[in-house]
Length: 490
Image (cartoon, rainbow, N blue to C red; front, side, top):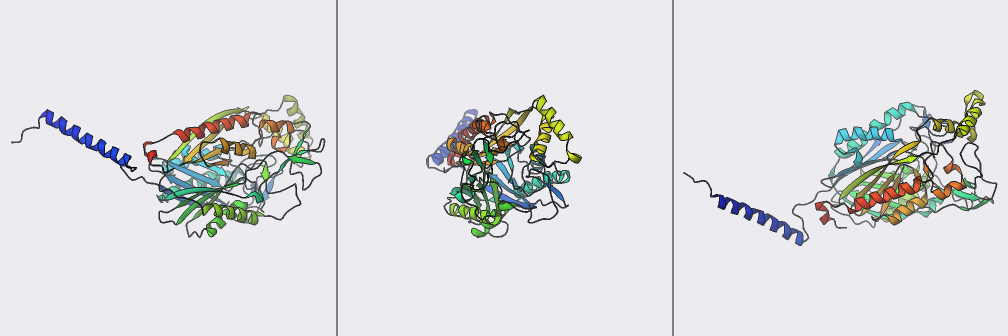
């Protein structure tokens, strides 16, 4: 008959086992290794979101537009990353802007399908002006049927990318394309800037798109960001899985329905790197609120969505060739809500706007004054605050700032300069839409991007508050370390 082990022997044996485990861990760490191999996975998907019924309302113009044909298909392009303990999803939608309620619905569906927390998802719009309208702004309403169709497609795209998760490696680089991004907002000679009786500004001194070599245009009102940022994902053997690009110019122009230069880039970057079937090219919008492809200081040049897409793809490819890949990097995400005030119209302004609208023939909007009179009335019926969601993502030493606005170049450059993560990519029109975000010093100049409407309504101090909050988030995700982070090669 066996005797039970003596209590003292049992305790000694247990302590010995613990000591061996601790010593093994210390030896592994001291030698630069880790007790267990870290796993990094990625999956990508491009899902067609072209409307199945035409015509549809198209957003992006001053007056309402419709499209009854498809020039090229629209997509939601998705990338899911997994560092073994954290998963994130990045989705870019071929759309002018996508409101937060629609995105929140899409995220909730995707979370249910994948288990990825909604707070770990970034969904942004490309800002093409040739896609169905899912947000009412200026002269265009919402295409309700398409707005019901889109959330499920975004969720399906994220879910398919998640199902495609497989071992991967990741890297990033930054190139330049100064050929297609110029500040479109100009300080004008006194009395020459366009005016708007219902925009909430007086004595406008700034004008957007003043025309080429306009003698009344004094100077541009700000800088631009000409970075072409690239995140590349490959299989461990080096087969391209996805490339996410980022550039800070407005749309180039395309007949609807079209993904504009964003779609051209997604196709051309795959061709340039020699990607095979299943590769997903993605193009996100940087900080282009006061920038477009037009160099108004000089004579007109020829460009279109094909030339812009090709130029940006070429710059991305040059950067791509310099990328150093990592078999594993940590993923960290943090969000913050910021309640901001709205520049609400006065009772007198609302009364004047109602009187103007009452005089319209058949109630049809035909001019800028008509559009902004209606915007004044609509804004007066909405809440006086907005709950703005901000987000920062860390991928190794790279940072992503997600901003739900059309952001000026000066703001984007300031975030990049002050961010502790290098490089940092700004993705605008992300996780919702709250209109233009002019810096405070731009409001006294007036001009389109400051004119009060649903597309530009946040308080004058919104920009510095958002920048401060984003830098706080970027610092937080930069400082957060998981135990496995000690193996981060960067």
